Each structure stands twice: as structure tokens, then as C-alpha cells.
Image 1 (tube, rainbow over the protein chains, first blue to last red):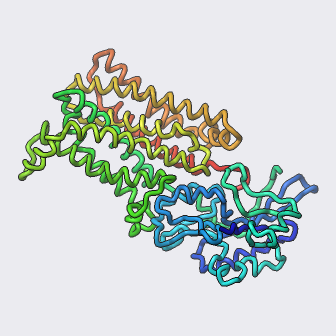
Image 2: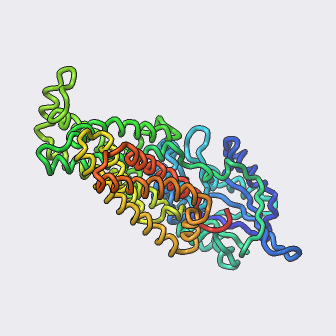
Image 3: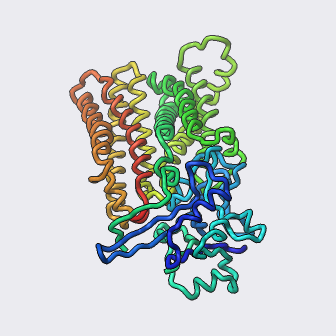
Length: 179
Length: 311
């Protein structure tokens, strides 16, 4: 099984939210929802301020709490790509996955199903980049297979310092923020 | 990193779904499920122990169980966002999901409690209108084994809801293994209170009142242990405990649960016992209201607790 992951370069991301809009258009996400967002974190005291743009979406955790807590198997690990995906035909809208997710990555769409970022799996299957990756004007986002040592993401993670969101929640997130 | 200021671009209530996950529907189900568990365990044990249990334990309590369970399950159904797919619970069993366990437990409790109600009413209750003789005779023949099965299922029903919430690792307020026992004890206490309301005999009312006092004591101790456990945990657990120890849920927690739901009814019930006073309706009603408040406040406080400082 591959293990697809994402890196987001916080040095090049300028917080334009093109990825947010591209995702919404590509995946026909219901209004008023989005599958991702950009959080601006400003720290320090004026005038010594530091700003980081944090693009947030599903962290495709290796120990996904949503999958463990799903009563029907609708939330599952897609075996070929190693991604956390949702089978809508199995989803009852019980919201256990939403309560289980430390990242608030999920929401209930207007059809009544749990929805979240899929890393644009249909596009990946066609050999295309996810919509956010293809749109990003800064080329800040990279998606690839962690287990393939020759992939761009593997070399980025080997060369750069990185951090993840809420590692203490223990779900082993696979979205890495490059410093 | 200690952010002194945070702003979010492109966010709206839809992007923070954690603002609302579960509301009154789930709290009502947790409460009624607990109440059903309490009624089944207490009356089931009475059927096992006594040849002629008190009126409320003999048939009134068991007869009420299917009604309460139906209302609770309707409430649960109302919460489902895609109701047509409810049958999907019964095409899967997921060992890591307490909700899956619960769905199957409900499927067992429902018919078992109806059979127990028929047996109890057939044996001790009034004559039912219409021809139920065959059904009630059959059920009455297996009444005592049925009672044992219902006690076991009642414990499972009473405890799984707490385990369900405690398994949701993203919400530190719920991350305590004592939440299952707390919900079970609260359900038992609520069951005893409801039986007091159903019981015509004053002696039996006082006995149920004393049982309720003991259960309230155990429930209070469990609640205290939960707060001690959270307060001595990591940063996220301590922040979660702060929700009821100075944070936004403090007033409702201490007034609605601790004072109105635990301390006051236990005091009145003890007073009834030792002064041999006429048992009254109020402590039982307070216990029931407190039981609902406990579920509602724990449900909402859990959704307000999270890992990390940002978002």
C-alpha cells in the first residue's frame, strides 16, 4: 500500500486561498462549506511579529480516529493509495467521525453525508495533481507517496524541517508543514 | 509558539463543524437509554431475588421500558443526518466503534425488554384488553431467565454510551474510562427515581429512596474521580476540566448537576428515611432532571474541549 501525504511550504504560501476556491469548484462543495481553509497565525508583540499561513484540511492520519469510530465502515483507508476516504453509500450521518477528528476536517453536507478533503482521489487516479496543488500560484503544496523514496515529497521531508498539527492527539497526521 | 493574535481567512460556521455535532436529540437518547438500563437492571434483579416484588418493580417499571426505549430510539433516529441509511448499522459490525456495538445492543434490548414487559405484566399486572393469553403465558414461563438476560443487556446499554463518548479521542473532556461507569450509575439512579414515582407502597418507596441515595453516592464519587483525573492529566485534559472548574460550563455543572441533581435529592431522600416522613415526588423528579442535565452538559462540554491552543 502506498501512503499518500501532503507537504505545505509555509515559507512560500502567501495565504491567497486560491486552493480553498479551487477545491470548492473542483469538488462542487455545498455552500456554505469548504473542505479546507487557511489559518493565519500571528505571534509575537508589535513590532516584532511573525506570521504563518497554515493551510488546513484532512490530515489523512495513519491512525485515523474517524475510521476507528465509524460504525458502518463508510470511513475507511483506501487500500491502494493509503488515503482516508468516505463511502457515501454506507454513511448514515451519525457524526461519530466528526466528534472523533481532532482537526475538525469534516462536516455534514446538504445530502446528509460526512464530507472532507479526499486529496482529489479521482484526479490522482487519472494521474493529475489535486486541484489545490494544480492551482497554487506559489507551488507551496506537494502531494505524493511517502513510501516511494524517489518521490518529490520524500526528498522534501528528507531535506527540510517540518511540523504537523496537534501531533499530541496521536493520530499520526500525514500533512506536513515545511518550515 | 504562543500566538497572541489569531485571524482566520475564508472561515464560516460551515468550516468549523465542531461548533455543532450532537444536540438535544443525543442528550435525550443518552438520558432515556440510561433510564431504561436502570429500570431493567433494578427490576430484573428484583424479579430474580423476590417471589413477589413490589408493584413498581413487578410490572410497572418493566412495562414502561419499551415506551421509553422507543422514544429514545426515535430521538436517536432524528439525529441521523441521512436517515434512509440507518439500516447500514445492521450490515456491519465494527469492533473498534462503540456506536456499532450500541446499534447491536439496541437490537437485542428492544425485543428482550418487550418480552420481559409482557412476562411481567402477564404475571403481576392487570388483565390486558384483547387475547394476549398465549403470549403472556409463554413469556411468563421464561420470566426469570428473561429477567437475567435483561439485567445483562441493561448493564451493556447503560455503559456503552459512556464508552462511546470516551472513545472519541479528539475531545479531551470525554477521555476518561470512568465515563461509562458514570453513565451507568446515573442511569441506575434515574431508574430508581422513576420507580419511586411508579410505586404505590410507601415502604417500597422508602426502600427505593435508600437505594437511590447509595447510587447517588457512587455517582458523585465517580464524578469527582473524573474531575481529579482530568485535572491531573496533560495540558489538554486540564483545559477540559477547567470547562467546569471556572470555565463556561461551571455554573450549570455545579447548580444543575451537583446541587439540584445529586446533593438536594439525596438529602431529601435521607430526610424521608430517618424522619419517616411521607415520601414526596420532588427528589425523584430532581434526580430525573439532574440525569438529563448530566447528559446534556457532558455532551456539550465535550464538544467544546479540544487539543491544542489554535482552533
